[in-house]
Length: 52
Length: 210
Image (cartoon, rainbow over all chains, first blue to last red; front, side, top):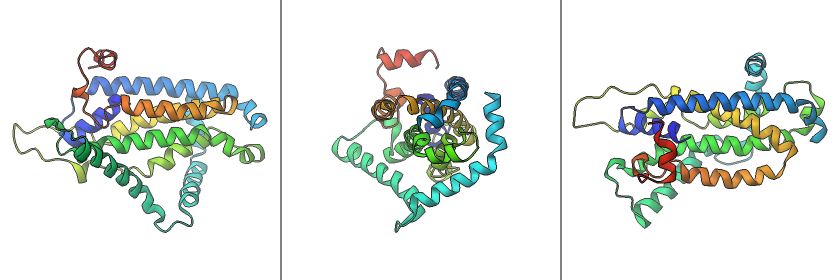
């Protein structure tokens, strides 16, 4: 979240952005998190109704 | 991953309907209603401004006026933390819905994230952008939707992960509260990124990405 928040601050407060690498890294981490979340959710899907 | 995205796109009408229902249910019976979406972050902003302007004044020159700097970080953080806190327990809370209605359960954590996104102004830049009166004119950065999109992908991913795991490990919900607390202070929301001391663990971890 550091890179996302820093990008918001640069964009909205300072008026210029030089944190592209950080935002790109955050996007990569986000995509990995999304893939991991979707995969895990799919694996556990059948067990969810029993457990709740 | 692509299947999950397609599933969410296919059920977008359901997602929209559940987000609307969630927002109506959240503010039903309250006097201020939907205004709480704006009042809550403003009160949080007021608290931090009071603490860091009056009690422990923050005098870093690059982040003045401080309340505007705080505003730029606190809104995305509130969206992120509220989404994760809500989505971690959403499957358990919607047990009856999952058992009785046939629909992809990943819709539920996504609804939590999107319901909290509604509280986030679509273009917060315009009311708070600080005009630069000195130095060469600068090219503005990307439109706010770009970091919002990155944050959305990250938040939905973590929400899917946490919502499924919490069903099996319910302690996770309590642990998450403390992890988010720590994460908040590790993220430069109340201080500037430049203020992180050289050689600190956090700086070393982040240095490679600058």
